[in-house]
Image (cartoon, rainbow over all chains, first blue to last red; front, side, top):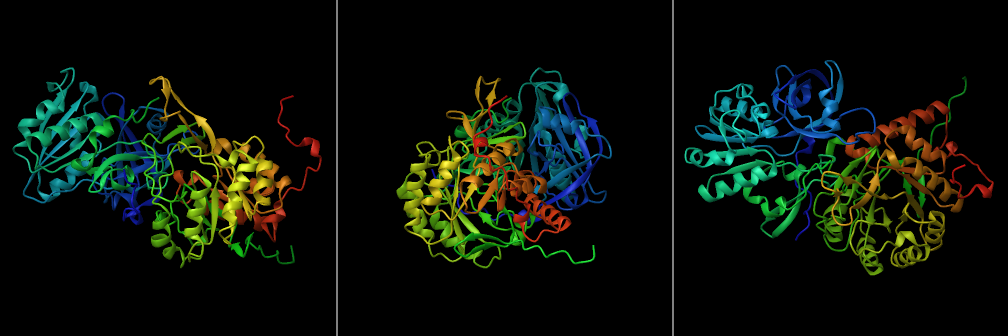
Length: 285
Length: 321
């Protein structure tokens, strides 16, 4: 196994550490909210799939910032939004913000999704909270005239990101594990027939779901480009804590690389899926 | 106040001609090799940069998870991921040569031979202003922890001292039974300065998984505000034991934290984990220290230093009651 080579040439110089102002929180289904903030400098430059590190409080506990894909950005209004599940103390604090509260915002960070050229068809596959980066990606695609297919799954209907929140026209295919909305099943159950008519796939969700999507695409449409947005426990978000290593495949063999630098969006074929899936869950309480 | 305040001399003399421009520096393992942060933390104003721990060969580091958040802190078990000393001397040192800030390479190894080989490759390399010897990296399987034992620590320092005239800072472990004894031993063996504390051994349990969060034995290095009182006590103790410059480390996130270390005997400080939370933390700490010094009309950081206690029976205190 090789070490992470000399630092990846990054565009960290795009990243800014600034203060945002909470404009409001909107409950989205069960256990999730969309947090909207005023943050003009980052709204001007963020690209789909990139993330921000949000400070969750002024005190030392919880200590670390929390990484979130940018859900929406409005450069004219100077606003950003984040779709976040309330899963622990950090996210609970963010969900308790009130209009006018200030919070530290560091971004944009990481590498995002490819926005394909038109004319083309992009299949967006999301699981649960993995819907987060797609409104921004969909908006960029719509501006370019890319046709969009939306395959979204969740455990239950209240956990499903509402399709109207994408705010762009899509051909939607919804699935829930309990059948409470859309078809019963998982996104991979519906994936196969959709692959024939698309030029590219973008996916975000739990790592096991992404692995299943990658396996399906590799089996059914091996030449179809697939990008996945991975999750990893992240400390700093800008490549110095070395906490977010993920197993990848490189021309010189298996390696560990930092999710915050080479990702969070990677070409599926560069991810070492068996080794990634063998790791313990990212956020075990 | 009629007379002009004395001008603050911010420099810190670490010995062997290495003079830091100011007292606030950044800790090994929290600032990469100095160029990763780009504009998020311009390095020009820092007192020094202590690089990521560097070994003879490249190291991929441990499998994740590598970090776990704890109250007012975090555990890490990175496993010394680094590109190896050849990349550092060939690709990184030429970049540092043109910087106003001194860069000290943190050196790690599994045995004395590796320390010596790494140091030999850094000796005389332009851009390398000095070395920080990491004699305590508990996160590497099979690695000897020289930092726990005065004789072992001295042996390592003596071997390194024999192959370089570079300024040599030795980073001390808070996990040693007697940190002052280790400090005396490494100074006698040729250390120009000491830095402390490295991380404390800690462990976090996942009840959901029924086992520690971090892999292997589950232990990692604890850092962050949680360890500051321990670090302050150890710096104060080492200050009474040795006369060489001390670089204080441990949970420094604000100027107040840094000033506390200067009071108990540190000559300079390293900002570490705080950089993860705020990449510009070290510069904010520096600005705050300067403002404090100007308010008090200090002429040197050392003017802050507490000179007591002299009662040796207080040494080793800490028992309750």
